[in-house]
Image (cartoon, rainbow, N blue to C red):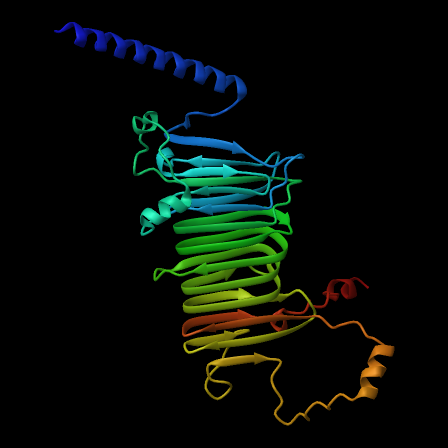
Length: 350
């Protein structure tokens, strides 16, 4: 071996030793400051944990954009944080600032453009030496503190399941999915829940103990279910081309309207809507063709309304439309009245 080669070999060894020392010092420093360099191994899963929000920092929006994964949002937590489970560190990106918390990974078909848009970058050889097994379920868990007020959740994924539980806030929820499942449980918001399922495979949508001002579902193929009387809404629009709906409509206000259109089957309060009684359409309240047309407003009538202004009547609404859609609907009219108390025993005693 030439002397020059020996010199380069010694220099290489020195650089390796320096690198190991720097990595060791970095790991110790990160541990002391609470910064997570490597994924924690919980069982066979690899987990990164990121905290956000708090008294000094408010979060306006949480954005998740992933491929095949499960996304869970849990409310009433002691603190706000996000768990990233079984994602490739070199192929995903977490970021947070004073207003937006975001986690992304490039999805299928995004190509080079998608990689640059997601801000994916090479993070080091140490991650290549610790690859995540391909068969592991990728999951994003989002925990929201009791006093945290996130204005909007924007969830996008290709396939998987989205779960939202124990959330009472003014938040908007926007879910975009190709196929999988969406479940809202014990959720109350004075804002909007919107779900867009664009895939050919069916998406199961289930609501349990949900109260919202506006609910919108647009899907090619989906099933929409609610449990008992646990879904209260002001404005609900379901546009499902192919699939099934089975739920009870509980309007937020006493007065309400219903408009159902489907070319398949419509059951309302246990009654089949056949061709003679409306064909593929159900409307409530029924339209009276013989009703007189409303009178035109005059200046005198407008002045009278201004002098004695009445409180605006609030009306809830339900609109369901689809082509090959099986509709099974129960309205407030189907709620049975309470049976009178049985006084037979008391009468017999007397």
